[in-house]
Image (cartoon, rainbow, N blue to C red; front, top):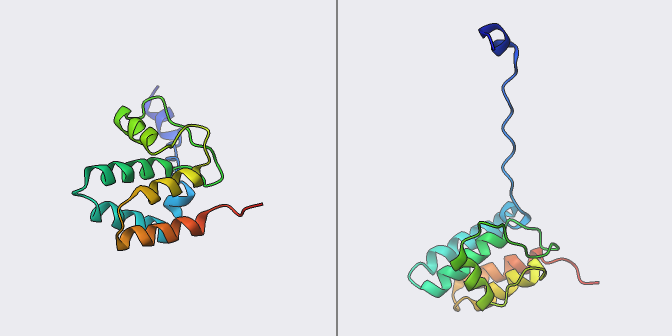
Length: 121
């Protein structure tokens, strides 16, 4: 390729960052961040927040699925919480929130999670 053809080729537009409905919701995102900070010293709660972080990429009405290279420790902790592939993401997120210790941030996260739950038929 010459300098002339390189100049004529438009630069690739970067793809928009992929985010999920939980991450896009300001209330949920703020409550999740607060819960992560509040539970920093509790290894089990921190691991549960990590599972929540992974689930937040998916829509509440979607099913839980993991990428091939997902961290094995996170997968193992998700399984201890009862979070399994094929399960409703909304149910998985609710189970994770319910597993967190009682705290003001957990209460806020539970409220934000409930607000995003799909309507029951």
